[in-house]
Image (cartoon, rainbow, N blue to C red; front, side, top):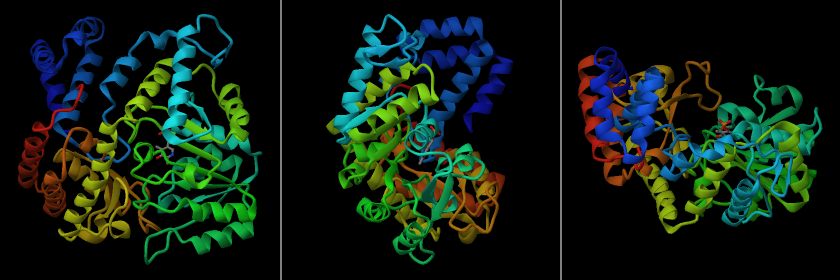
Length: 448
Ligand SMILES: *Cc1c(COP(=O)(O)O)cnc(C)c1O
């Protein structure tokens, strides 16, 4: 946000100079010929790309669902696997020429199963949303009841938001968090389950800053005869590294995760399930919902699962959690009210309305101006509308990936709090932006 408009404006005036400067400073040798070709065929898109790269380097990425993909992932996404159709599954494809696609998909599936201690893996979902759709459509009938978390309490759009197609096809009922503790109210959840007899109970979240015991869900599901599904899209990397609990260890039937958030892989989805659901899940993904899988994404996912099994990744995941706790403590000491009072995972929700009298949309815009990327966020039972909610959501996966540690959390909390106190003052914001850039300059992003 700081750098992109400047890079863009500069490009408009001196395109050659800007391209030259960014190329010489930021490109690896192997990328340079491709960039020269792109410069010739589409300079507008190249300028936007270099602007986005500069924005990512200079700014501090605090959106908890974003991350920097492993450099190997970027290489594979731009590889010849992009060219290949591979409808079907290894050994059972509709097209020829599959010796290498079969090999990478088999590796991806086996590595995913080992990483998450799962009986079966499907690595073809194009992203998180079709991944969840494939589970609902494969295991349930239209009109069936699904019990899932209320959106404003932390659930995801694909957990039955009225604006989503899934919300029209299935009968979603809700559980919520307790207003005093902010934790999931399991007694109320069990009551809803007994009254509505759901065919499936979904847990997992996008903005709930706590962990929970999956056995609590499993007990209720067993009592009412429901299938258990955990959508761990945000924390897939943390579960892979065993720094957060794994729902499959608690006997869950299905677990889904995106591969591009805390896992640092390609944009995509992964479905893990018990063997008894394997056939239904595979048929639901293809041919039920999708056509040809993106084999460049499958190759990148395979490498991601290998990297996520290393000691280095375990250290990364542990640091994500340590950084989140340090950032939450530093914000709290600056009078910022956090939803549930803190965090047990990688994310936290700041109640900016109550802390500073600023709604989440204004807070997001102010933080953008000082180089901190966040997203506006509804808080439980938010009195304000979704486009102008009461808070912002932040997290630590991306900043941890560039090596930022607990020593920097106090400065980051200070920049956040001082930005919200400055309340749009341009002079104060300019100084705060300089502090953000001084910090990010010390932490280059691997592969970018
Ligand atoms: C991000 C997310 C998804 C959807 O992923 P997309 O790739 O954006 O479609 C689904 N569920 C949860 C919990 C998520 O956080």
